[in-house]
Length: 413
Image (cartoon, rainbow, N blue to C red; front, side):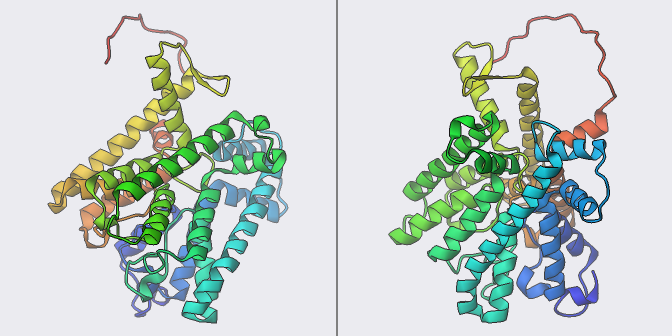
């Protein structure tokens, strides 16, 4: 809200500042004011800092400060780190944090250098370097904030639909940030020996590959048919990648069919991997639900992945997460549709983008009213913190009781 944060020197209103700060720290990318034309260099720096903290995770950044100041990391803090990173064990968690920080800095710096080359050619040296850094961090953290409003407000990357360097680097950063820190550790430790990977890494990589390839094929075959082949090919692949909670777009999403928007909504809700910079209900949740469905159809008692059995508690958690995300997504969409008098599908697209911390939009968010903006703020917060975490915090009553109620059969389906 400070006057030096905006280009006009008057400062942002409380709601605009709150919405932007929430979107940045939750690495969503939804905006009510164009990032390039409304915010000053200082304001953009604040947004970039929030994106970095939100992408790395508040707990990771807090532990990093402890390490830099030489403070001892307590057992409780190590446990919080283990939970935040989805690490399988407590041992080596400080070493893993150092590896994450080094890898993040290396990947973001490399991405910034590569992006600066075309951006400097387009915008000049100083602005090109800043654009390269800003978009590298935003892409790696799956945030979706962009500075292309100087070309056309709220345009994202639509000015570069077929630029090979910008498309490839942005997509690589999105996928790298979205597969999760523990997957990085497996790749570093075992290289190409895939059989030695943790089961979680195998599930993440397999599911991610399928969720990139199949939607890209669908978009290529059924969407943007009036475009040249090169633009349609790049666009199909980029839109498949960015829907996994990144928030950039190189094509006009309002031109997509209802079927295409439905696929985008599904991808936004699924999101990326646990312990990553991405949001959504996570690819592991989707994989567990899908495998459980297959097990039911085949009359198997347990859910399996790669020769390993999944615990029943994991299946219950996955079911609860799906229910919570659908409740938030559908409830928010219905409320906004009623408040604004807008088509339900368009409103569902915005709420899926918010709760999945994606940032893609059909152009509705800046024009929505106060009530709808508050709904989106709540959805972004819930999507980043984790709906299940909020429910545990609000409803947990301590240790469970060993007593069990009598059982009785209930037919479903």
